[in-house]
Structures are given as C-alpha cells and as structure tokens.
Length: 148
Image (cartoon, rainbow, N blue to C red):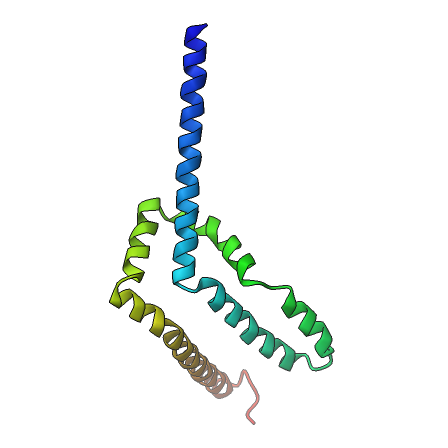
C-alpha cells in the first residue's frame, strides 16, 4: 500500500511540474508575441486586406464590412498563435528570442520589420506584374492570346 501512495505522489508531482513548465513556456510565448507586436501587426494586416476586399466588392454595404472587421481582435490573434509557437519552438528557443528582441539589434529589427515587409510587398507586386507582362507577350507572340 505504501508503494501505491509513493507512486501516486510521484505521478502528482510529475504532473504538477509539467503543468508549471507548460505555463511558464506559454507565458514566455505571450511575452515574445507582445515584444514583437504580433497582435498589432496581425490587426494591421487584416485592416489592409479589408480595405482591398471592400474596394473589390463595392456592392456589399459598408455596414457588413464594419461588422465583419469588428469580429477580429488582437487578443484572438495572439491566442491562436501561442499553440503554433509552442509546437515549433522549445522553451529555450522562446527565451532566446525574447533575449534577442530585448537587445538593441532586436529592437531595430522590430522597428524596421514593418517597413521591410511593406517595401517587399510593393516589390513583389511589381515583380508579379513584370512576370505577367512577359507571359502575356510570349503567349501573344505564340498566337495563344489575341494581340490588343
């Protein structure tokens, strides 16, 4: 009987330790997401996409889009992201990223990343247009598309 109590006690301590480790990792992931402004950046992306969708669908009343946009929150975005970071990174890696983002270089990365993404999107759109023009010209030259 004493062995059974010992076994139960060991299992309870193990479970409590694992839970505490999971909670600490989750808290650190949330700290990382706060440092990187993940929720805010996600909301900016949603608002940007919503503007494009509104423009592409002018027959849909603005009230519909307004209500749809209200359904998103940075907290929900963070909550959805936590398990993804948990799956792909160890607790030590999360701690290391937090340490990086607290350095001057990490702060500069966080400051510049939105600008880099924005400029990259513009370049990517230009590149896509260039590729499309080359394909259209080639297809026209091959007689697969009508000439304008």
